[in-house]
Structures are given as C-alpha cells and as structure tokens.
Image (cartoon, rainbow, N blue to C red; front, side, top):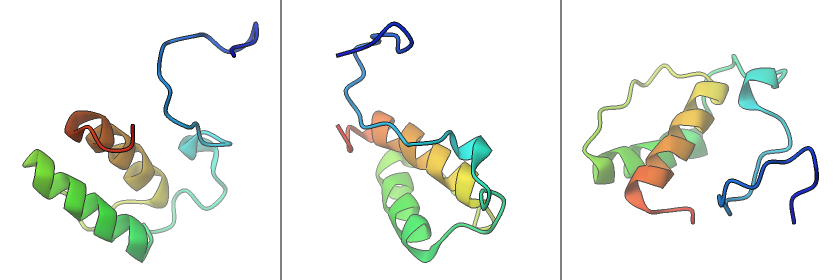
Length: 73
C-alpha cells in the first residue's frame, strides 16, 4: 500500500533501499554476480554490455533489461 510519499505507479517490483546514484560504493566496478546476470539479460535482449560499468550503472541497467525481457516481475 502506497503512503502519501510513494506514488502508486502500478510497478510491483521490489525497490532498492537507496537509489544506486546515492550508493557510497556505487562508482566501484560492478561485481561478478552483476556482470554475470547482466550479460545473461543482455543476451536475451540482444543488447551489448560494456565490461567497465560501475556497480550503480550495472544495477540500473539490470533493472532496465529485466523490464524489457520480462524477468524480475
């Protein structure tokens, strides 16, 4: 149930505690598990993925590709 500070967008995906842009370690290189899952999603979506993404950007791209591929619902 949304409160007065949370818009009800119909999106039922779990939300991260913090925005990836606000992560203290967000600029560090993406983790091994992020890289693996991102490449799986990218292959399904037919998208190339750079290998030098930050943790924050990898997380954002994972969310985008999950939405496009129908995963993570």
